[in-house]
Amino acid sequence: MKSIIYILLICCFAIGCNTTKPTTSNKNEISENTKLSDTVSITNDELEYEIIIIEPGFNYWLASSAKPEGFYSQQYLENRNLIYVNEWNNRVIQPQRYNPNLYEMQIDYRSGIDYGYEVNYKLYNYFIYFQLNYNQRLGPFIPRI
Image 1 (cartoon, rainbow, N blue to C red):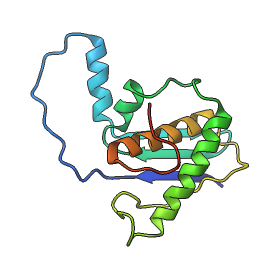
Image 2: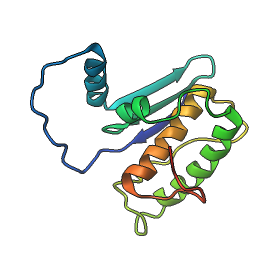
Image 3: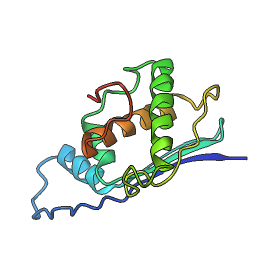
Image 4: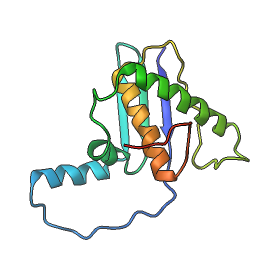
C-alpha cells in the first residue's frame, strides 16, 4: 500500500504579472520555468512513499535559496521534520485557533520509517519556506536558510 504525504496550500495572495522580457541566457529561462511550476512531487518507489507539494513559488525557492542536497544529514532532517509535522498537525486540528487556509491537511509522517533523503530534504525545506513566507513558527527553532 502506498502512503502519500500531501501538502496542499493554495496561495490566497495575488501573484503579480510580469511583462514579457526577452531571455538573455539559458539560466534565465530555467529560472522562469521554475517560477511557473507550482507542484513538486517526489516519489520513492522502493519505499512506496510520495510527497506532493503544491505551493506557488516553492519550487523556485527550493532551486534558488535552499541549502543544497547533502548539506544536512538525514538524521538532522528527520528530527526537524518530526517536530515540524507534530506542530503542523496540532494546528490542523485547531482551525478556530490557527488559520485553516494555511493548515488544511494533516501530514502522515511517522518516526521509525525511513522515507529516504529526498523526501526528508524536500519536506524540511518546505517547512522552512512556509515559515519564512507566511511568518509562522512551527517549532523552537528560528527558520533560516
